[in-house]
Length: 354
Ligand SMILES: *Cc1c(COP(=O)(O)O)cnc(C)c1O
Image (tube, rainbow, N blue to C red; front, top):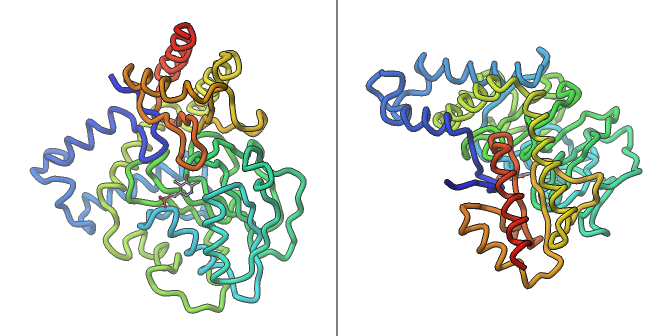
């Protein structure tokens, strides 16, 4: 058995893999594969409607908030957001918590002014910035709620009077939050919602239509809202896998229930990192991510042997991001507690052999 700690694309529930593979062969006994049905058929319309409804329900979204399933990954949102919301004369406020936020900042600068209100750069992104102010007139305020590469996470979302925008690619649906407080939330599906190839965007429709810029049809959120994410052919299979994963999450008891398990998983692994003399956490304790747990070894010469030891024991995907080195264990919703227990056991056993 393989325990999969990949950062993304990442583990999904086993029942989702089983049902999706069956659907590729024969969707709902229709004699047709999910891959060969038209997106405007009642069959696919029902899938899209259910995926949207489940997300609204799980996130407790109000009627102002629309759910979109779009192409292009979270990276397309880096540019689509300022294109829709920022005029050239205006400024937007961004927090800099590492690679993904830097990419978002770079794209926003193509459309308007950007004020970086805080940065974790001075401490190599090992902590979430504290004590900063956001100008009232900033058109919006952007944060990256979980920093996948470093393993840092905003434990408390800073609430401002601006339109709030969040890249939640690596922690959406992992913890309870007032999602209605946001003007726009976006997330590539491949970390915590489903298969790669689709991007979830949740937008408060009241923030749209306020810029003077002419927006290309396919980039204008209003068109996607109007067409129910069917302006053009949606990523049919990826939306289907999202729907299955959302069904699974609902069966688990929803976001509150999965948050409890996520807390348990993270607490267990961080405890071992802190207690085991071989290992060391890399992020300020109060800012540690519950989704991506990053750590190193006190003796760097032991990192390769530990990686080989864990690989041999069926542990997959714990090598750290190429920018940060060390290790990263991603504990997304679908990763069972038993896999974390197994990793902890492996760390103990490796230590006992030294
Ligand atoms: C993975 C990730 C992205 C990039 O997502 P793509 O779908 O590959 O464009 C952006 N932001 C965060 C926080 C991520 O973890």
